[in-house]
Length: 337
Ligand SMILES: O=C(O)CCC(=O)C(=O)O
Ligand SMILES: [Fe+2]
Image (tube, rainbow, N blue to C red; front, side, top):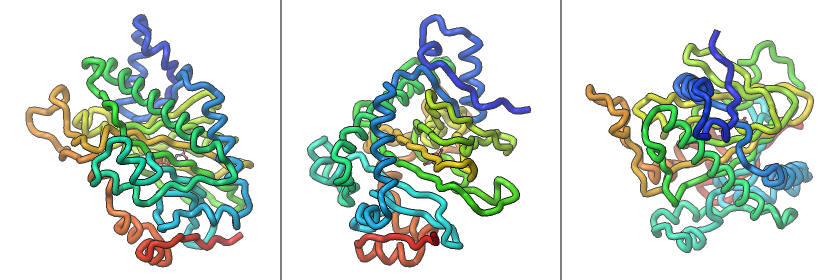
């Protein structure tokens, strides 16, 4: 039977005297599942609670108030949005936060005018929660720090220099808050009640915190089977994204995951997607290069971040959503209540 997703004491695994068995567990998980849980990760409880409590209050607002928090330009990755299935049943409610609020903030932080255009679609901060912007920055910075330490650990278990997966000083990040509703409909199997379809993130690593009363998040083994990631309030989940797979020429597998419905309360998760700076082109590092050639093409972080929203919406969006995007106006999905 494939292994479960291991829970790793991050401080112990990074210590000089880390037990070899613990490092072997990390290595096996990184090379097969691409997902670990970490505890003793150093993020203060109040940083996680400050962010989660603020967003819980926002997502608990009446729908009419939340509609005001949709992206003013119809961008699918800014502000509040709801995500119904083909029958109009709410599968997921999301709040997306970009790294900078607007082009001015991005340029002031040192981004080139071209890269700053990513932030023409502004962040939406709920006026009901004046402290949320600062709480989000604290949360994001703490999770980036966890990402850096996990990458140091992965370098250690792969026996390469500790700074092999250095992200540099100008990391590119995005933040998303997910609320999955209770699912009152009958479904026979997990496959019939997927609220978030199977995918791997396009980050280097993603650091996630989850809340709820059932193990809705599942990770995939190389043999295709799924294993639940139990809720542990003191744990963070770390997924390997496709950039890290590229960097290691496939040695570290991307953590494929999905979310199934269940439980008796709203399931919540909040993720920080961590990438190196937008100027970076990620390609297999010499330490991992296969002399017979690589299956991995270099990836420009900028090109990926700038990706084609129009194309995304054509594949996954509703026609009215695509129309709103083209006309640069807010879009609010119709959901059955
Ligand atoms: O809700 C979760 O646990 C996973 C969320 C996720 O995979 C994502 O936002 O990319
Ligand atoms: Fe994901």
